[in-house]
Image (cartoon, rainbow, N blue to C red; front, side, top):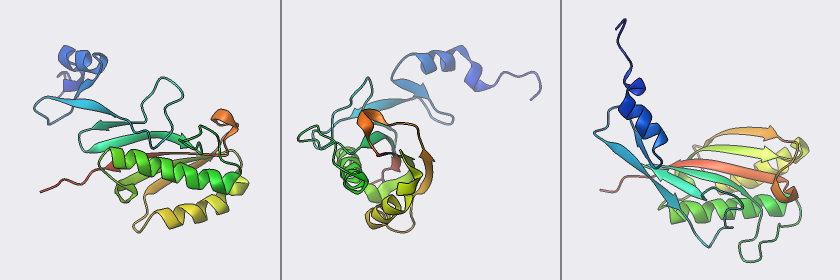
Length: 160
């Protein structure tokens, strides 16, 4: 309607946007709480962020690099790093109550697009059809000199 103020501009909505862990969602009867997900089976965050955040049935997994969670050391080589990244994502997804089968979107960051075919082959063995949506980018550098980083979004299945 012309002249009306959208709901997202109300002071209550703005307050929710800036108040920390609660956010209003259109059509909801109240705030959706963000829940931090953590597991020792994946590397600890190396900055001020969570391994994953659950909001409703959606889980946003932070980018993982090929760090071995037991040693904190980066695996050697692109293929070993890609496999470790997927194990780390699997562990975080499991801690959130899901699995790699629940992934709906991936973002793949590569230090060298020349590694695309190798990483693609490894990813094909980790995900079944229908494959998640995906974007792939070559980047100038990744944390700790990693060759591969992958972040994911998964949607948990409702039980019942």
